[in-house]
Length: 191
Ligand code: SF4
Image 1: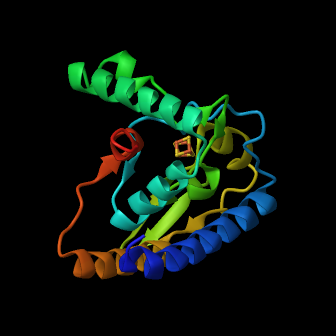
Image 2 (image 1 turned 180 degrees about the vertical axis):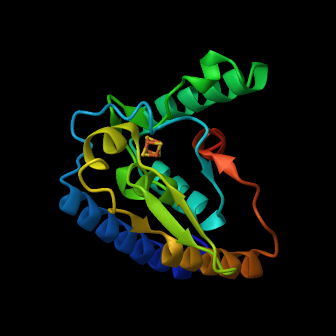
Image 3 (image 1 turned 135 degrees about the vertical axis):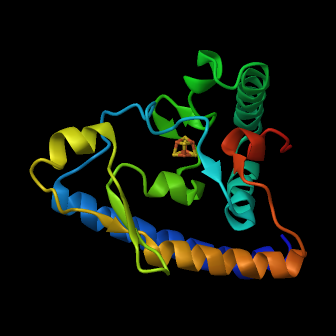
């Protein structure tokens, strides 16, 4: 782990803890749970990770997995990337499930990126220009919860701000930016 990783991982872990707390509070108020959902609609292959910090942390979790599982995940990643390169709009790619989803469970749950941690519950983002963007929750939330609790949302603003600060620190130290990558692209080349 680089100097960068040593300093930034605890900040990222704390940020994830705050996200999980906000998510837990919102789901408790709503009586919402992912129990029984296989994650196929949420764990899609085109979720994008935008930051070095999250990529590094995901790879860190991956490297701690048992070897047979790592090999299976790598093979899944390669299959996903092959399907993407042969037909990015075709069903083999678009309908595939994230390489880390095994029987509806994320095998890197503690290391999963922000986009996965906050999925499912409606959210707002307050922009610096004083506008606000809103997005709905997953199908289950919109069907079962929103009609009863229309005002339950997670405010992602502070999470995005801290993630941006973390990434700026990382870019300053590394002297370059990263391209945004999918989980398959992040882990496909890992050993
Ligand atoms: S990283 Fe985990 S939670 Fe996120 S899409 Fe993949 S399997 Fe689902």
